Image (tube, rainbow, N blue to C red; front, side):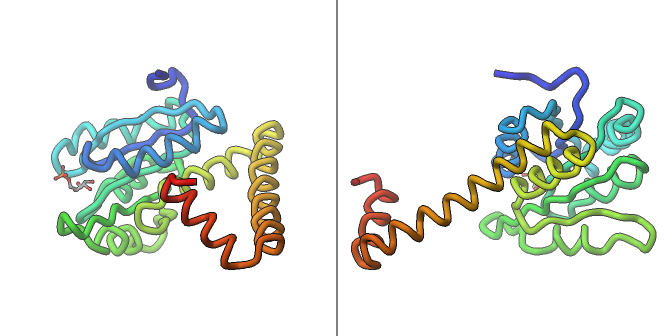
Amino acid sequence: MPKNAENPLVSIGMGSKSDRDIVAKAVKVLRTFDIPIEVKVKSAHRTPERMAEYASELGPRGVKLAILVAGGSAHLPGMVEAFGKVVPCLAVPVFRPERGHGDEAKKSSDSMPPGIPLAVFPNNAADRAALFAVQMLGVYDSDLRRKYERYHQDLHDGVIADNDLLEELGFEEWDEMLNQQEAGTA
Ligand code: RP5
């Protein structure tokens, strides 16, 4: 399996290994688009010096965008934005009520002071942050832009195919077929 790229365009930082299931959603998207990435665990609270060093070096190392996944008080996205300066940061708050982590991570990232930009995505939506990163990288990369256009065309075609089948079968049969497919019995 691929390790961290030597010259990543996107860096994904997570506050804890317990965030890795959310990070996996971003990794999957970025691998699909063949974006060179790196993935790191950097805790703003448990390893503050290492987090600061990581963030400060993003720009000088040529990283174009950072996706930061963190829950709880979630200082990682804001601090990477602060130390990373010119590197655009995309925050993905971790929402895990079963472990006592509610909406506070999102509120924390939403509350950056004036003059400090931080793009904040919905709770756990690392896949969407990754798609946004692909769009941004595509601004200066026509091959990547074409790949993104194909991805979008597939979404479009998928909805049309869903509708065609619905009209062919009628709602009840279509619903039953999908339920069976989802249950793995079809
Ligand atoms: C945050 O606290 C992490 O990003 C994680 O979402 C949360 C819980 O961390 P662990 O206690 O599971 O390491 O810093």
